[in-house]
Image (cartoon, rainbow, N blue to C red; front, top):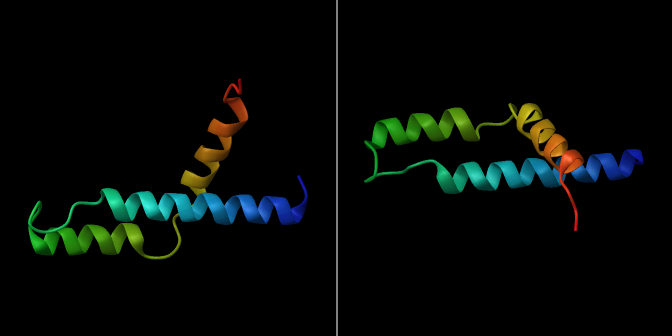
Length: 66
């Protein structure tokens, strides 16, 4: 995979992780507003994306394609 391909993969995977987090983290009224705010801040702030991106890469590497 070229450097450009790797960069594109990481950007796409990072975007997928951020979209999933934003969609799945509970918000008020499903959870107390202060707790919802704290979870969103902790999870959606920048950084902390390398591990989930590597997990997606590993899953794609071992996935069977029909």
